Image 1 (spheres, rainbow, N blue to C red):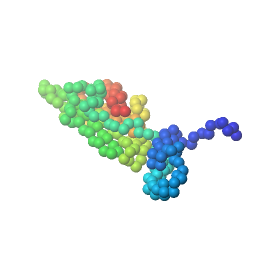
Image 2: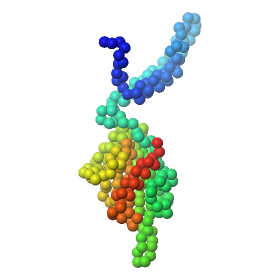
Image 3: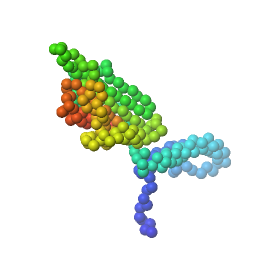
Image 4: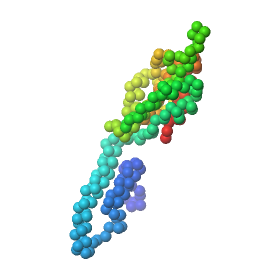
Length: 241
């Protein structure tokens, strides 16, 4: 065998980086390898043995963490998609994202905004309300003219990979409804419109699911799907990186 040939590395670079970082932590406890010297003085040697007993436990813990990190990667493994890293870590807030979603600013209802943050999930929902003329009088609609909702999952704080969990839930909900879905995110489908809605689009992009629901006079049937697709693309662009 050619001794100069490179041996393939069995793990991805991210795993090697994790091992290197954890080795540096161990070195910090024991001292850098080049700084570790043999102690000649008998009294210093005795003190060294006592110090070694005190540092052995945290050093072993560092090695154990490194082993668990690599072992965890191998147990999850990338072969079934479970090792895919989270694409997003934070959900947007309506005050920052709503202005870029191509929806009428005068229909925004900040008092209807909804945001929930948990260790493994985050959800944001923003609403717009149009108006209609009934018997010659224009009044605000009871149902929203537009709703945009982001549902983010994070692997940290959960017992499973967030992207895999979102993909599984998306597939179960989509079933056979993806035939005419637009090419947005990783996958998308048109949902059944709810009360007051003209069209409803659901998108998955990595560990995020996004809902865009439109209705009312501002989103009639011939234009609704094109409008929803434009809003969905803008909503993905508004995701914090």
